[in-house]
Image (cartoon, rainbow, N blue to C red; front, side, top):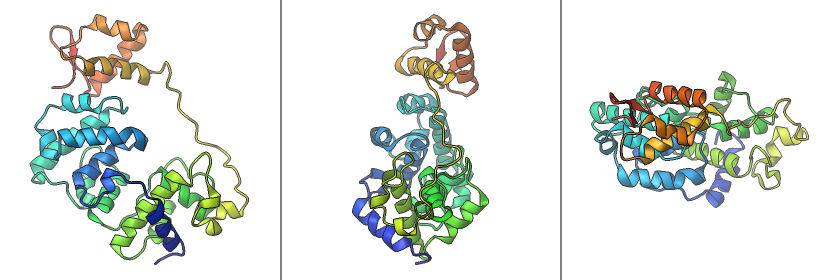
Length: 289
């Protein structure tokens, strides 16, 4: 082991890990990739049924690539941030065309796919293929900030120092390192939470610098984003109308779901610009074909 934290965290994970389909023995790399895209800014409880339905409909990248992009947006439902569905469809198309329908296994090849950033590429390489990379999501960053840096919350974006710290804590064996990565992620999700950390049951509380310092509050705390009345809510209503309609939608039907004309027009223009809605020659709108 490369640190005194690994053994207690791995033992805790063996006893407390949630039974999630993308972690199951034999879960396909496609299942892992879909889960990582869906889990971006979306809680596990909402992702579970969506992931199950997605894999039932499209069990492989080639199955998704064979359908129009609009069907991916429709299936995405109300998970939020629907551009993720378009990026996943684009990735499936490239995987089918350039990788013989198999999710690529290397960090570099994964990073080249649309919608795949540094975190997601590392997560898929680690959790689907057992590679050895630092995986820094919000939960992992919070655990390491408290445990090793004595801070309640990390900065807004991962720093070079954070990556170096995460890499220094990885066990040497790739399989153990992969298990450590998911274990720390689970610890942040279940125990070292943002609002009410359960320090009394944390397996590494005796090593935690933040706890040893008296759990000092951060100078600035993460602020929740307002949703009611925002352009994002308006876009969601308009896209929901397109998603639920089997036929193209005339402009006057959008008035019924969002009465604010300037905001509605702005949101509809944004959906078109993002490729989530197609304006048709007769003036109606539909999901991308």
